[in-house]
Structures are given as structure tokens and as C-alpha cells.
Amino acid sequence: MSLSGKTAVITGSNSGIGLGVARELARAGADVVLNSFTDREEDHALAQEIAEETGTNARYIKADMSKGEECRALIEQAGACDILINNAGIQFVSPIQEFPAEKWEAIIAINLSSAYHTTAAALPVMRAAGWGRVINIASAHGLTASPYKSAYVAAKHGVVGMTKVVALETAEEPITANAVCPGYVLTPLVEAQIPDTMKEYGMDRETVIRDVMLARQPSKEFATVEQMGGTCVFLCSDAAAQITGTTISVDGGWTAL
Ligand code: NAD
Image (cartoon, rainbow, N blue to C red; front, side):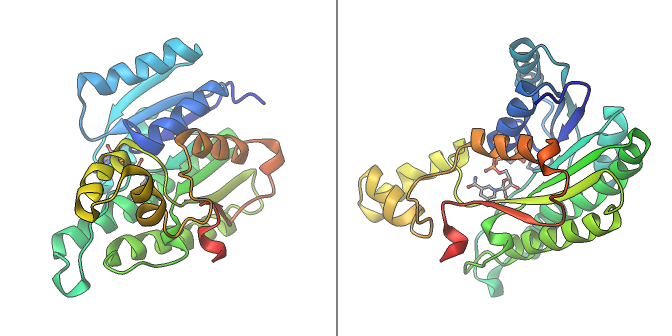
């Protein structure tokens, strides 16, 4: 399958899942727009590296996903948006009575409201092009909960709900909207937590991964960013044209428990 001629905008894509999804979409032929709020030389270099590897047009555009007007400007600056991947996200963990209000606001803004702004800006572009895919990177926490993650769980459930609304509003058009719900994915952020957790629990790496990090992931294996990208490529294929308004879990069985 080729996504040649399509442009994909991936929010929060200078690392982790967003970068993995961008790579796989470019490998499938799409032009990709990478994004973060940092605008460092390395960010532009990542786009260059993808362009060289895949022969597609890969660019980097700075936009802060905590700001509605920058979310909308990202779509405008991209110039085209056939595939929108709402991926930018942050996390903060605390009991709700101590949860700092500014962290709550930031998580809701970056993990949920940004997807509202980008989708609102992208749908007219997709309609004009006569084809579109909205893919929201939610989480197993869009379907289940864990203690101390009130803002994150609220935002991810919100993303799943908004996905269904967008699917209904585009149901008679060649546009689909779905949410991908990963369990634990091995990203640099997750990898970085392993040494501290080993120290905290006095466990070796394998035990920390199996019994602490993947305690709720029955497969006892992390998902990979390549698998996340492959799932998004599938959702862009003709085979997925009637898949809309739903969630696809990539969680090693987490939500089957
Ligand atoms: P990550 O920290 O590697 O990536 C987060 C991305 O968001 C980065 O590119 C960062 O630059 C970007 N970002 C953060 N704040 C931003 C802002 N204000 N404006 C623009 N970009 C911003 O983490 P990740 O694990 O790759 O997570 C990506 C998404 O996947 C998130 O939505 C996260 O909730 C979700 N997710 C991750 C896991 C996992 O196990 N890694 C599991 C479930 C869901």
C-alpha cells in the first residue's frame, strides 16, 4: 500500500511514538510534518533524516500544543493535512487532592484540547481534498483507570469520546476518525524510568520490566513504536475505510483483564 501523495501531520513527533509513527508513514510513502515546541537543530535534523531514508518530503514545524492558536497554525503552515495524528502528550502522577492545578490544566490542554483544535482546523482541509484520516493516540488509560493519574485518565477518556463524535460528524464522507490505545510502549521516556525503578525496588532489569512496569500487560512485552506506526498505516489503508469511531488497543491484552 502506498500513501504517496498524502501529507501526514503528527503532533509531538520529535521522540517516542510520534517519531515512530512519522517514520512508518513516511516508509509507506507519505510526506510527513514533524512537530514539537522545541525548534532545536536536532528536530529539523530528524525530518532531514526521514526525508533521506524514504525519499519523501519530511519537514519540521514548531508549534506549542498547549496553545490553541498554535495548534491551528500548525495545520495552516503544513499546507496540506490528509492524515492527522494527534499524539502530543505529557503525564503527571499525584493523588487528586494534591494534584497541582497547573499540571491538570497543562495535561488537559496538551493531551485533549490540542486534538480539538487540530481536528477543527484539519477537517475543512480533508474535506477539500476528498479524503482524510484522524488518528488520536489515546491510551489504555482512555479505556481503564489507574490511581494518581486523574488528569491523564480524564484527558484520554475525553480523546476517545471526541474521536466518536468526529467519526459521526464525518460518517458519510471518505474520512475516518479512530483512537489507538497503547499499553506500555518502549520509548526513551519509559526506558529512562527503568534504572530508577530497579533502585527503588531493589530488583534486576528483567524483574522490574515484568513485575512492575508490565504488571498489567499480560503479554509481558512492551509494544514498539514500529508497531504503533504500523497500526496507523493500517488505519490509513483502504482495508480500514469502514473502521471509524472506534478504538484499537495495542496493549498486549491489558484491557482484556
Ligand atoms: P514522549 O515524551 O517520547 O513524546 C511526547 C511528545 O509530545 C514529544 O515529541 C514532545 O516533544 C511532545 N510534546 C510534549 N509537550 C508538547 C507541547 N506542548 N507541544 C508540542 N509537543 C509537545 O512520549 P511517548 O511515550 O512517545 O508518548 C506519545 C503519546 O503516546 C502521548 O500522547 C502518550 O500519552 C501516549 N501513550 C504513550 C504510552 C507509552 O507507554 N509510551 C502509552 C500510552 C499512551
